[in-house]
Image 1 (cartoon, rainbow, N blue to C red):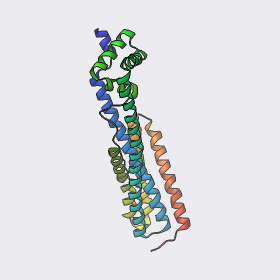
Image 2: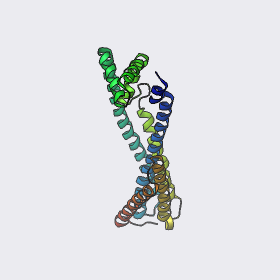
Image 3: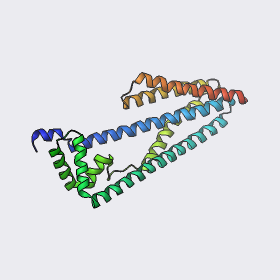
Image 4: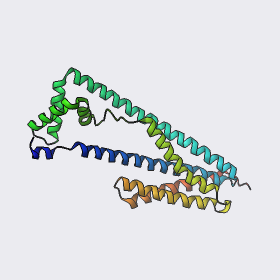
Length: 243
Protein backbone atom coordinates (compact mmCIF):
# COMPACT_ATOMS: atom_id res chain seq x y z
CA UNK A 1 0.00 0.00 0.00
CA UNK A 2 1.44 3.34 -1.03
CA UNK A 3 1.85 6.35 1.24
CA UNK A 4 -0.91 8.13 -0.68
CA UNK A 5 -3.28 5.20 -0.16
CA UNK A 6 -2.39 5.07 3.51
CA UNK A 7 -3.19 8.76 3.90
CA UNK A 8 -6.66 8.16 2.49
CA UNK A 9 -7.52 5.64 5.17
CA UNK A 10 -8.70 6.54 8.69
CA UNK A 11 -6.09 5.75 11.32
CA UNK A 12 -7.26 3.45 14.11
CA UNK A 13 -5.84 5.61 16.86
CA UNK A 14 -7.55 8.71 15.51
CA UNK A 15 -10.88 6.90 15.14
CA UNK A 16 -10.65 5.55 18.67
CA UNK A 17 -9.89 8.98 20.10
CA UNK A 18 -12.71 10.52 18.09
CA UNK A 19 -15.19 7.88 19.33
CA UNK A 20 -14.07 8.38 22.93
CA UNK A 21 -14.49 12.16 22.71
CA UNK A 22 -17.85 11.79 20.98
CA UNK A 23 -19.03 9.34 23.61
CA UNK A 24 -17.99 11.63 26.44
CA UNK A 25 -19.74 14.58 24.85
CA UNK A 26 -22.92 12.52 24.46
CA UNK A 27 -22.81 11.60 28.15
CA UNK A 28 -22.18 15.21 29.11
CA UNK A 29 -25.12 16.37 27.01
CA UNK A 30 -27.33 13.71 28.59
CA UNK A 31 -26.22 14.81 32.06
CA UNK A 32 -26.96 18.47 31.29
CA UNK A 33 -30.39 17.60 29.92
CA UNK A 34 -31.12 15.41 32.95
CA UNK A 35 -30.19 18.25 35.28
CA UNK A 36 -32.33 20.60 33.22
CA UNK A 37 -35.33 18.26 33.58
CA UNK A 38 -34.77 18.11 37.33
CA UNK A 39 -34.72 21.90 37.61
CA UNK A 40 -37.84 22.51 35.52
CA UNK A 41 -40.06 19.70 36.79
CA UNK A 42 -39.34 20.18 40.50
CA UNK A 43 -39.46 23.98 40.20
CA UNK A 44 -42.87 23.79 38.58
CA UNK A 45 -44.22 21.59 41.36
CA UNK A 46 -42.80 23.41 44.39
CA UNK A 47 -43.72 26.84 43.05
CA UNK A 48 -47.25 25.59 42.42
CA UNK A 49 -47.50 24.26 45.96
CA UNK A 50 -46.02 27.50 47.30
CA UNK A 51 -48.76 29.35 45.47
CA UNK A 52 -51.33 27.24 47.32
CA UNK A 53 -49.84 27.33 50.82
CA UNK A 54 -47.08 28.92 52.88
CA UNK A 55 -46.71 25.76 54.98
CA UNK A 56 -43.01 24.89 54.70
CA UNK A 57 -43.65 21.25 55.63
CA UNK A 58 -46.19 20.76 52.84
CA UNK A 59 -43.84 22.33 50.31
CA UNK A 60 -40.93 20.20 51.50
CA UNK A 61 -42.93 16.96 51.32
CA UNK A 62 -44.15 17.78 47.83
CA UNK A 63 -40.66 18.76 46.72
CA UNK A 64 -38.97 15.65 48.08
CA UNK A 65 -41.66 13.43 46.56
CA UNK A 66 -41.16 15.16 43.23
CA UNK A 67 -37.38 14.68 43.39
CA UNK A 68 -37.65 10.98 44.22
CA UNK A 69 -40.43 10.23 41.74
CA UNK A 70 -38.78 12.23 38.96
CA UNK A 71 -35.37 10.67 39.50
CA UNK A 72 -36.77 7.14 39.51
CA UNK A 73 -38.87 7.90 36.45
CA UNK A 74 -35.84 9.23 34.59
CA UNK A 75 -33.78 6.19 35.58
CA UNK A 76 -36.53 3.76 34.60
CA UNK A 77 -37.16 5.42 31.27
CA UNK A 78 -33.47 5.53 30.43
CA UNK A 79 -32.99 1.90 31.47
CA UNK A 80 -35.85 0.71 29.26
CA UNK A 81 -34.72 2.83 26.32
CA UNK A 82 -31.07 1.79 26.47
CA UNK A 83 -31.97 -1.85 27.14
CA UNK A 84 -34.03 -1.83 23.95
CA UNK A 85 -31.10 -0.31 22.08
CA UNK A 86 -28.74 -2.92 23.53
CA UNK A 87 -31.10 -5.76 22.55
CA UNK A 88 -31.21 -4.38 19.02
CA UNK A 89 -27.42 -4.17 18.88
CA UNK A 90 -27.08 -7.75 20.09
CA UNK A 91 -29.58 -8.96 17.50
CA UNK A 92 -27.69 -7.18 14.72
CA UNK A 93 -24.40 -8.68 15.91
CA UNK A 94 -25.90 -12.19 16.01
CA UNK A 95 -27.11 -11.75 12.45
CA UNK A 96 -23.71 -10.45 11.36
CA UNK A 97 -21.99 -13.45 12.96
CA UNK A 98 -24.34 -15.79 11.11
CA UNK A 99 -23.70 -14.08 7.78
CA UNK A 100 -19.93 -14.12 8.30
CA UNK A 101 -20.10 -17.81 9.10
CA UNK A 102 -22.40 -18.85 6.24
CA UNK A 103 -21.46 -16.39 3.47
CA UNK A 104 -17.98 -14.99 4.20
CA UNK A 105 -17.15 -14.11 0.59
CA UNK A 106 -20.37 -12.14 0.09
CA UNK A 107 -19.75 -10.27 3.34
CA UNK A 108 -16.21 -9.41 2.31
CA UNK A 109 -17.45 -8.07 -1.01
CA UNK A 110 -20.10 -6.08 0.84
CA UNK A 111 -17.43 -4.54 3.07
CA UNK A 112 -15.31 -3.67 0.04
CA UNK A 113 -18.35 -2.05 -1.57
CA UNK A 114 -18.87 0.17 1.47
CA UNK A 115 -15.27 1.37 1.28
CA UNK A 116 -15.70 2.05 -2.42
CA UNK A 117 -18.69 4.25 -1.59
CA UNK A 118 -16.47 6.10 0.87
CA UNK A 119 -14.10 7.00 -1.99
CA UNK A 120 -11.50 4.22 -2.18
CA UNK A 121 -10.60 2.65 -5.49
CA UNK A 122 -12.01 -0.85 -6.10
CA UNK A 123 -8.57 -2.42 -5.76
CA UNK A 124 -7.75 -0.63 -2.52
CA UNK A 125 -11.24 -1.23 -1.10
CA UNK A 126 -10.92 -4.97 -1.80
CA UNK A 127 -7.49 -5.09 -0.14
CA UNK A 128 -8.67 -3.16 2.90
CA UNK A 129 -11.73 -5.38 3.29
CA UNK A 130 -9.61 -8.53 2.99
CA UNK A 131 -7.04 -7.39 5.56
CA UNK A 132 -9.63 -6.14 8.05
CA UNK A 133 -11.64 -9.33 7.71
CA UNK A 134 -8.55 -11.43 8.30
CA UNK A 135 -7.70 -9.47 11.45
CA UNK A 136 -11.18 -9.12 13.02
CA UNK A 137 -14.08 -9.89 10.70
CA UNK A 138 -16.86 -9.19 13.17
CA UNK A 139 -15.29 -5.98 14.47
CA UNK A 140 -14.69 -4.66 10.95
CA UNK A 141 -18.20 -5.40 9.71
CA UNK A 142 -19.93 -4.24 12.89
CA UNK A 143 -18.04 -0.95 12.82
CA UNK A 144 -18.68 -0.09 9.18
CA UNK A 145 -22.09 -1.67 8.59
CA UNK A 146 -23.77 -1.40 11.98
CA UNK A 147 -21.79 1.43 13.63
CA UNK A 148 -21.54 -0.75 16.74
CA UNK A 149 -18.57 -1.91 18.79
CA UNK A 150 -19.24 -5.55 19.80
CA UNK A 151 -16.88 -5.14 22.77
CA UNK A 152 -18.46 -1.93 24.04
CA UNK A 153 -22.25 -2.10 23.82
CA UNK A 154 -24.43 0.47 25.53
CA UNK A 155 -24.91 -0.15 29.26
CA UNK A 156 -28.52 0.40 30.48
CA UNK A 157 -27.55 0.47 34.17
CA UNK A 158 -24.88 3.08 33.60
CA UNK A 159 -27.31 5.20 31.61
CA UNK A 160 -30.02 4.84 34.26
CA UNK A 161 -27.83 5.87 37.18
CA UNK A 162 -26.28 8.74 35.22
CA UNK A 163 -29.71 10.06 34.28
CA UNK A 164 -31.03 9.73 37.82
CA UNK A 165 -27.97 11.39 39.33
CA UNK A 166 -28.17 14.32 36.92
CA UNK A 167 -31.87 14.76 37.67
CA UNK A 168 -31.25 14.74 41.43
CA UNK A 169 -28.50 17.35 41.13
CA UNK A 170 -30.69 19.64 39.09
CA UNK A 171 -33.72 19.12 41.34
CA UNK A 172 -31.84 20.20 44.48
CA UNK A 173 -31.65 23.79 43.20
CA UNK A 174 -35.40 24.59 43.24
CA UNK A 175 -35.96 22.47 46.34
CA UNK A 176 -33.47 24.37 48.50
CA UNK A 177 -34.37 27.69 46.89
CA UNK A 178 -38.02 27.30 47.90
CA UNK A 179 -37.45 25.83 51.38
CA UNK A 180 -34.67 27.98 52.84
CA UNK A 181 -35.94 31.57 52.34
CA UNK A 182 -38.74 33.10 54.46
CA UNK A 183 -42.29 32.93 53.03
CA UNK A 184 -42.29 36.56 51.84
CA UNK A 185 -39.47 36.03 49.33
CA UNK A 186 -39.72 32.27 48.88
CA UNK A 187 -41.20 32.19 45.39
CA UNK A 188 -39.10 35.09 44.09
CA UNK A 189 -35.88 33.52 45.37
CA UNK A 190 -36.76 30.15 43.87
CA UNK A 191 -37.66 31.72 40.53
CA UNK A 192 -34.40 33.68 40.40
CA UNK A 193 -32.31 30.62 41.26
CA UNK A 194 -34.15 28.41 38.80
CA UNK A 195 -33.82 30.89 35.93
CA UNK A 196 -30.11 31.25 36.64
CA UNK A 197 -29.71 27.47 36.67
CA UNK A 198 -31.63 27.11 33.41
CA UNK A 199 -29.48 29.79 31.81
CA UNK A 200 -26.41 27.77 32.81
CA UNK A 201 -27.76 24.44 31.51
CA UNK A 202 -28.92 26.09 28.29
CA UNK A 203 -25.48 27.59 27.77
CA UNK A 204 -23.77 24.27 28.56
CA UNK A 205 -25.98 22.18 26.26
CA UNK A 206 -25.47 24.65 23.40
CA UNK A 207 -21.71 24.70 23.97
CA UNK A 208 -21.48 20.91 23.94
CA UNK A 209 -23.63 20.72 20.82
CA UNK A 210 -21.87 23.60 19.01
CA UNK A 211 -25.21 25.43 18.77
CA UNK A 212 -25.98 29.15 19.23
CA UNK A 213 -25.72 29.82 22.96
CA UNK A 214 -27.94 32.88 23.18
CA UNK A 215 -30.89 31.17 21.54
CA UNK A 216 -30.54 28.11 23.76
CA UNK A 217 -30.38 30.21 26.93
CA UNK A 218 -33.43 32.29 25.98
CA UNK A 219 -35.39 29.16 25.07
CA UNK A 220 -34.45 27.37 28.27
CA UNK A 221 -35.20 30.33 30.53
CA UNK A 222 -38.50 31.03 28.75
CA UNK A 223 -39.74 27.47 29.22
CA UNK A 224 -38.80 27.50 32.90
CA UNK A 225 -40.41 30.89 33.49
CA UNK A 226 -43.62 29.85 31.76
CA UNK A 227 -43.73 26.59 33.72
CA UNK A 228 -43.40 28.35 37.08
CA UNK A 229 -45.86 31.08 36.10
CA UNK A 230 -48.54 28.59 35.13
CA UNK A 231 -48.09 26.30 38.14
CA UNK A 232 -47.97 29.24 40.55
CA UNK A 233 -51.19 30.57 39.04
CA UNK A 234 -52.85 27.18 39.41
CA UNK A 235 -51.67 26.87 43.01
CA UNK A 236 -52.88 30.35 43.87
CA UNK A 237 -56.24 29.72 42.22
CA UNK A 238 -57.01 26.45 43.98
CA UNK A 239 -55.00 26.75 47.19
CA UNK A 240 -55.38 28.38 50.58
CA UNK A 241 -52.74 30.33 52.46
CA UNK A 242 -51.83 29.07 55.92
CA UNK A 243 -49.57 30.54 58.52
